[in-house]
Image (cartoon, rainbow, N blue to C red; front, side):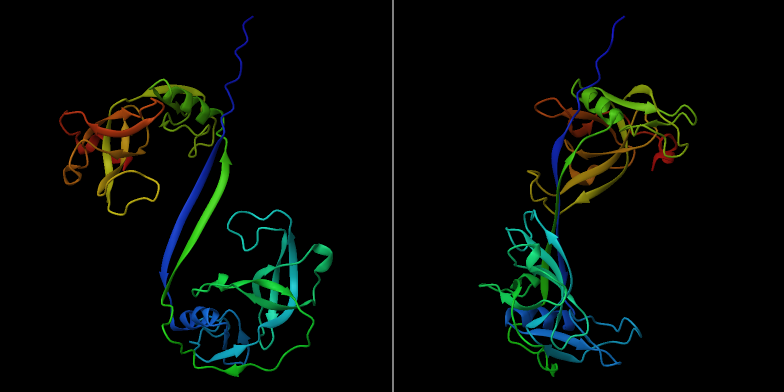
Length: 319
């Protein structure tokens, strides 16, 4: 009896990164500009509560809030959690505590890092103070962290105009997730086939739809898909968009076209870049074929085959 060994377990490090750029409301602008100037601002609600960080609308009544007040740079830990292994991009490179701190004069707590030698040095009720960053630009990281500080609770909040020179009007908030991806059996077979310049999907035994890339199960019928089906290599552009913003790590000149491509024999469309044709000539129904990467492991992009465009009725169910 011949036993077929299981396919190699694939793993790859992946990074999902999205730098989000946003403008600021007057309240947010005052808060972040204040941090740059070593000043912590909150906002007073109709009921007299002081919210830090400040928000634009009362969470209880939805009334617009503009009554800014200055609170202390010392406060009290209300709850905490120890972080023994800081990740890249976190406030401190050494183990620290995530803490909620109610600053003196505030009625809500601010989430930030506490620099402490170990979890035994942290407790609810611990008095702390802000440690300012050496260089500040108007972001939450202008507070480098909190540090233990033996002090009595401070005074009441005082009114503040929220006016500063050169106010911060916008920020870039980088979001990044680093993780290791390991595909399941269906996608492992799919990737191994791509290395052979073949595109393989799996057919649902119930509805007969062919999924590419395969998912191991039919999301509509809820049954396992084990019948492998080779599709393509040609396909049809069903929908597309023109990309005008250059990706940070992609060496692709803009504008370019990213499209949904229904490979021949597939039951749904997959994503792919279109090249070999001016971007303003790409159209629905365009017949395309894969151009493989230099190492031959995956389609780098798709190009026109020169065939007549596909009739709309042949792909309208795949839009």
